[in-house]
Image (cartoon, rainbow, N blue to C red; front, side):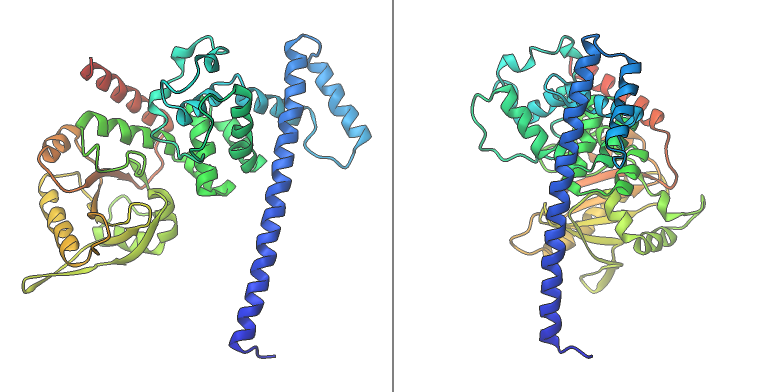
Length: 393
């Protein structure tokens, strides 16, 4: 039977209602499941810490549950220890929770008693994290919160909104509190699937975002014009499957064919406007590489692709394009356009010199067509932090 247009729209609306209701039910069921695992982990952790339980006891508990509820899955010895780890990683005394507190309560607004449970507070590098993590909380919090109240919010607004499988992925691959919290909050904010989360961890998104932030500190690039956690450096485009030797046209075509994955890598909020976007200046036409609009920043974002290392002369052409966009394409209510130069490599000192007198909002970032070892990025980040600390002394 052929449906008329109005009937089809009605059917689509009913289907949408069904899908939304199922999503709410699934989210509620997941929250209850994650909370159950947290509470079970709490009991196991406390019994083991008190010395009342040993490894054999945990195995006996797994056997007991299996005998009483054989249809239940996940409560074997391995699963119970995962729940114990989950509780210990995010409980009221954990480094992750204190980092979350520092994001919602800047220095000076957080009661000193909030930190009473951590012995090595100098190991918690709070200062670097708040600018990287998406703030999922509203601002109408009490002026003097209790630790218990805030941990309840942490559970409800962060932990319980993430799938248990995603929690397991983070627990098994991320060891530092800053990294764990970064991926938890990002996964909730971005609604990453398990597959997307795994790729973000595999491509070292945390290290690359931190690395980009530290590079911006050192070069003092447009601190007040660009959000420090919006773009990553370097960008990993292994999904483009480009050969080692490729042209800029190959690079551009591969991105267009993998647009969804490209946007996932560079960050949320992008709307694609086109490639080889025509700009007419005087009596001549000019064509840009990739043009996007960013919903959160409310501005045009131009990506220029270079298959070679950064050279200062690249900026002149990019600034010309940005000026043309602002004069002829940007709407009065929109913010100034941002330019992003994706280069095969760059010398930080050359970038610093080139950007010293540059007035346009511009980012210069590396890209890689293959995965980078996380250890290499972590070492590079450590070196940049040391350089910045020396310069600020």
